[in-house]
Image (cartoon, rainbow, N blue to C red):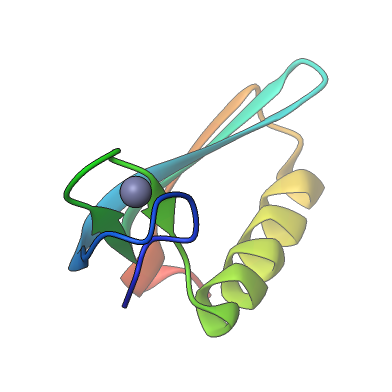
Length: 75
Ligand SMILES: [Zn+2]
């Protein structure tokens, strides 16, 4: 995978994705991603973006101030 910003190599890894929705904070841990070795940009594959959207949708329904979800364990 090449970085979409600078074109350098991006290594496979994991990150924590944080979404802010009004007063709510949705934190998703252990999200598979690629990280640029040059500029540190985090790149998600299309599958991961879709899955993250689903997880955020689920979390929204719970209406908690802070939701912490493990990517691998999300329903
Ligand atoms: Zn880069």
